[in-house]
Image (cartoon, rainbow, N blue to C red):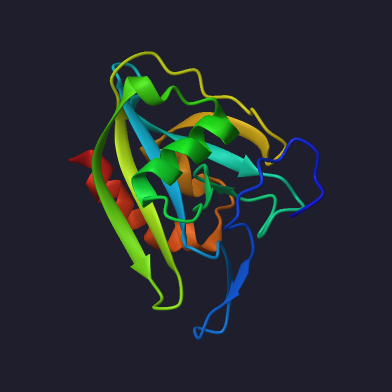
Length: 161
């Protein structure tokens, strides 16, 4: 992932070889933001990111996120990544809960939040092909990043609360 113009490099940007048999991005773990809004016409929608082809599991959809910087807490990291990748306004959201996928050697935290003001999500760095509001019933119609697909049923329940 290094050498791509416009990327925000962090000291934690590197692969971790995990005892689960996979490699994961982020020496200090990783985090992503699942931002939801209630739209009167469309129901509940979430922000999804169409990942570029050169990224891990590229050309799939997931949530904006990435590696944590040294000492960075997952909520701060998830919001920072969403600001960098999707133009999310950090001042117009409220964190509701978190969900941690813990692999012992590495962890990924999904931060679930709701909008508290206008949001104009859009691609704001080279890691995003597209950023879109997607209705809850339409999420699984897209090719999803495998970890996001596996966690979607539980995440959807958290959003629907």
